[in-house]
Length: 140
Image (cartoon, rainbow, N blue to C red; front, side, top):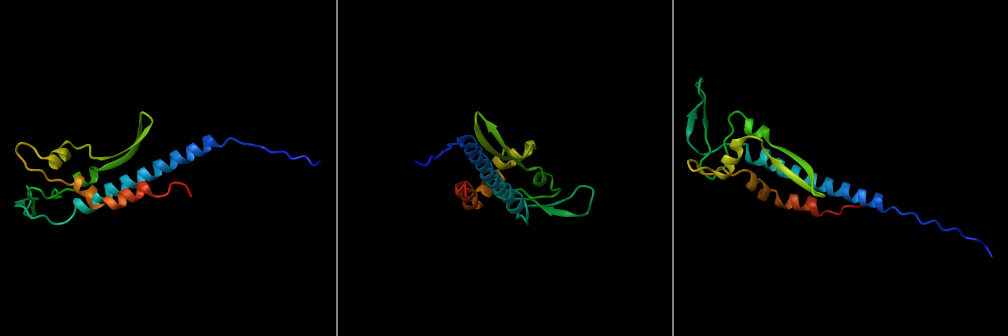
């Protein structure tokens, strides 16, 4: 009678690592899409608020009106937005944001200024692409 050898190998650690890597890749793709929505869709273009003179020059710019995304004069706000994937309590977390204090004031408004939303509208504008990145097949 012929002999047969069977070897069983436990690859669960590699499979788990592959799934974690795929999870992080999809999350990173989704937050990159959201970031692009902020800096490419919301914080560019003309606004319809009041016109102001730029101090120290003869040039002018048009501000945003309440409810409109903030106008860009220097580009500081636009270039401040960053994204990253972190891990908290074993969960991957995607973060998109600006370290500038006034970014939140613009988004939410203050007691003296109406909101100039740009983060949440960027999400809604690219929502289908963001969700697509998160729900696409992980392992091929």
